[in-house]
Length: 259
Image (cartoon, rainbow, N blue to C red; front, top):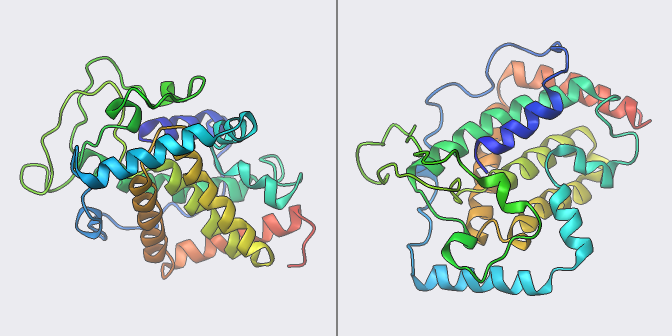
């Protein structure tokens, strides 16, 4: 998702007092060209897109009420409490929460640039057979008549397509998959004892977007790739490592784990 993800984050964390993280960005402007890194999404009505649509339809038929509930609740990194336990709460990890939020914000900004470049409609827009449950589709609604302003440097030339009005935010890449992968990578660095479980949970974030009918499989893959690439660029930066170390110490203390 586009700015809806960031809005949800601000609702959760907006009232929090600013915490002691570095003011420096973890990725410098122009350090990554995500549009060149990722393949374009499948063309409309192509065989690739038809296969992906069939996958989304199959997931829709197989989903249970319990799966729908869990998928709808995967809105931010706090869903990783299913792996890390009841002490993994905002009240107990305020610094780590702000750190994950900052990394996610930088990653999501790059995901949005790619969304602006390739305005792929969401599965339920492509086919009326796809029916997102409850209010799932509402989280992707744009302002009436909103045009997706292309923020990419290649906006005026190929490979990007012209900006266009759209009732819903664009599908490729998946911001939610990026959120899940970002949290999985960061939390695995903090709690390596749970590395396998954390990555499985992060993958679930993306799979749940397919189950809800909000994304195609290639959207999920692209979101994960871009999140991983962004964090790989952050890792050599001293500010990132200093903040990660502080967040790690806080999380491990909250979970009752040795330093």
